[in-house]
Amino acid sequence: MSNRGLMTMDLTCPEGHVAGQLIRGAGQPATEIQLPDGAPEEWPRGGDRMYTYLTCPGCNRRIYGSTEAIQERALWLSESDSESQGRHSLRYLEDSLT
Image (cartoon, rainbow, N blue to C red; front, side, top):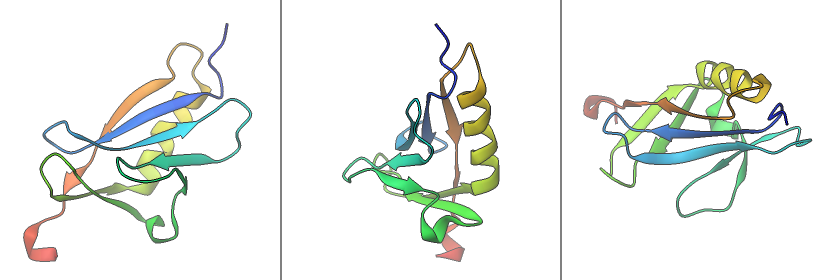
C-alpha cells in the first residue's frame, strides 16, 4: 500500500525538541501545522511567507527556518512511496535579532 499523499514532519529545534508538526492526510490538499498547545492551522500561516517562526517548548527559545526549504522537504515526503514521516531542524533566532 502506498503512502503517497500522506506526510507527517516534525519541526525541531537544534537540541531535538519537537516545536511543531506538519501534517497532510490522504486527499487533503492543504498542509496543517500542529503546535503543542494549539489547534491545527493551515500552513504556511500568514506570517510564514519567507520564514516559519516557532517557539520551542523544550528550551523556550525562538526558532525559524526557510518556509520554502520546509515546503520542499514536505513535498518530497508526501510524494514518496517509501517514506511519509520525517524531521526538519530549525535554527535558533539569534538573541540580538529579537
